[in-house]
Image (cartoon, rainbow, N blue to C red; front, top):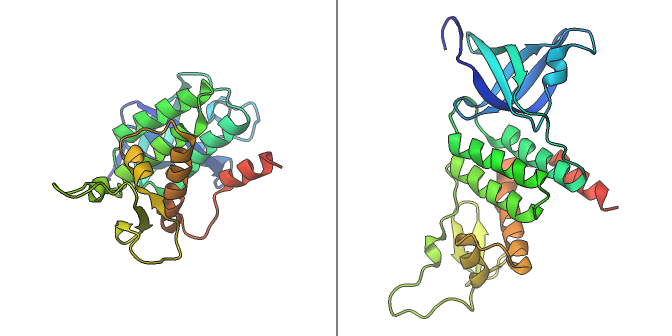
Length: 239
């Protein structure tokens, strides 16, 4: 990006904000057109500053961004919707989605399908639908956006070969799904459950448990050793 210029109005969600220099905030935003971006917003010193008040997560924001060198600056903001009144587990789930995006999404790459999936997930959380399928579907969308989607084609049987419904499979980060033909220090996943996950059939509780365990294995090397703060909120709420 070269020179200073104003971008067209952008529809974004706020993923995260933190203090940045004097009277400013550093924002992580999710935009369909721009993807995950960082932007600086002057917030002023007053608690009544309208810009600071409008910078709320889980709200559709219309923002004007100025590009200066490699830096985005937020010059104007309007709230297109009120923040969704998420609470307890639904709120923590929203924080989880935000944290995954901030931690894993590269910046300045358009991600329209993921933006739509994020928007849909928030609406479902607001309607207090079952949380686990919402999170799992978003995780799969995020993996696809990262180019790390799971290859389920290895589960397909060749003509004349008996179904593998009695077999178990491992997931290895470097290799994906492999038959559990030898002992590894890793979770094994039921073939039938993996087929259901592949087909998006996440209604059964045992399939959901398998899917959650699978996602934990997939995301562990991507997230590294730094724990997710949103998972701590889930843990605290169960005490």
